Length: 336
Length: 262
Image 1 (cartoon, rainbow over the protein chains, first blue to last red):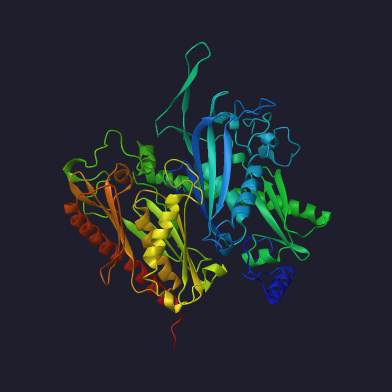
Image 2: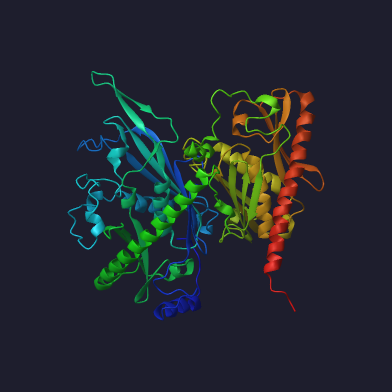
């Protein structure tokens, strides 16, 4: 990512540290840094979240729901009754020296593509007849639509359709990377999950005028909004960095410079792998790959559990503040 | 009833239905301020880890993040100035910063103009001659836009430059004032800005009282000019006390954190 230099001594220190399972900041190989998340902090959006990993990485993710035409695939005729999700990631030059001017274009593009790919991984995986029998929660979710293909990351896109064949909700997910401290992709997906959980869109009512004419009415009632259907099925990802013969999670900027190969594993709460992405120039052995996928899966599941608990706790605090007639307290950038 | 409060903050960006007149009753403005009242300003420095200096500033609902890198080696040889440093300003707006989602190109004329104004206001104030053949980068990012972008940019830049330890002669404090409904008004928000109001942005050096930047939009009678300018200058001085407080608090905080030398 950003162009930084590393000395042979630092490189050696990190290599030996990873080998000995003690990293520069005292963590073990499988330890995450402290992640703080706050939702609902950008007032002009439908949903938003700020993710900060202790030691640097800081980003804002916003979700904005807008009404637009449906996107129909001209060949298959697919998509006439589906909403859309459009992702874009922007790295701000203030985050890193290498992102000045056009310098961030490649990174922006790479991150947007990864995000779009993970989010568009079919929710056919959230299938009640899934072979993954080890997760009982998967079978206890009959409400999810196992047959719908091309769904976005478990989000039920057909629920975002307003008038089939004409209008739908388009969810624009915009992420702004404000500060760089390593492990951007994991933070990005955590932020997206949190922002989607925060998102509320107005209800729409379909009206039929006869002779095939439809129109809809937007319910302007701010007390009666709907949440995004299927949001709990969204995956997050865990990025494993191969350093030497071992791999670590949540790499710091210096550790990312030593990384030979990186594997990003997207996993949903049922422990199903929703996407894989290997990057950087190094190679890895197939046996290590399988081991990495396995541990990425376990870590991801644990992480989703923690994340959801955090999001729920915040939503509960906000609600109780509103019950008392006070606006929910948001710290934003004043959080220490 | 309960949830209505929740959405209130989201709706506050848009003008309430039927209240398109600038002034409500009792001479209060659309957001409940008096004509000579500033919006609430909150700021904090050192918010980013990578930049040499950074600041986050909230001016009412306008929110901005400023980062400063440098003084450092000039990145492009063509920018070398032998007797002083080169100041580079980049300005951008988040796609979610306005009520309507829009992605702006890096070459948006209006954005380049704002960057140019910021550069011009800081060039005489930063002691550029003590950093010859080097470069100072200023990156500005609007997170939420509710009017008075230029003033917020300048105020945030002042804080970020000070946080980076760049030598400066003085603070640069900026404020807007305009003429609404036969009355001068301080610090316009986006609703007040939108309706062809005459608006003046002034950047002041509080110590010397010199004006570093002056920009006006729409027309204003020449007799009213002085009154508006005076009001904006008063606003700048008020902003100066707020910014000064932030810098001093930060310095005291750092002093406390330092291990006392025995």
